[in-house]
Length: 247
Image 1 (tube, rainbow, N blue to C red):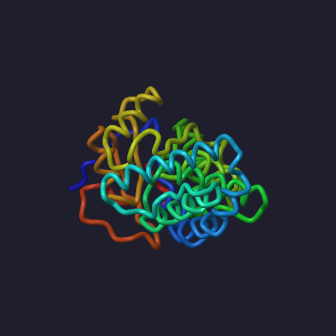
Image 2: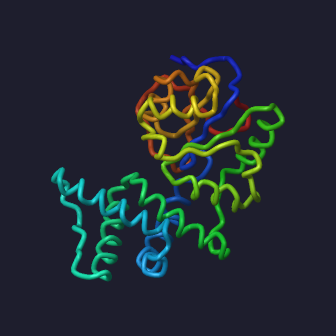
Image 3: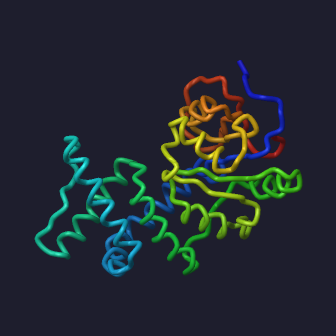
């Protein structure tokens, strides 16, 4: 059953991983890059106000995990070095859990920023993405991004792609500050912030649970099936395999 609307959307909201960008780039390039440099980055940038805020948020999240009986690596307070080292260990543990923790995503974004600016990272996109962005702009559609990665990480990715800087096509970016991607309320907040009725928005993702939440909020949806994406459960979301001929 296909329940997607035939109306042309005013706003196209896109996921990144598995939708615009190969999953392999995220898991085999970006995540290892951040993990390998995490401890040195924390040590070198500990005095930066934004990094200090990320550290304090990680410590608070660690305390919540312990209260809930999750048993993460505890934060040590014997010395500044022990505290920093244990924060890094906790961040690595969160990575192993694939936890979409906001302070972790913020730190990863800052590490990737250094890598992009140093020319050590260049974002991979599916080849149909850049032409679609240009076509949608010509059709006067707004393109927005919603990812569990931080807004900083999103902007860095789209400004350092193999197809060049694509940020000129993108109206706005949303991350976990707006809410979880499997929560319908998150999509309502995005629509409200864009001053756009949900019925005029289309969300594209490779994850059925995210699309279910967007549909509950009133969005049109497309399930993006790309090479390397994990299989999804059966659903009524219309399937696309590239951006060449939609919406």
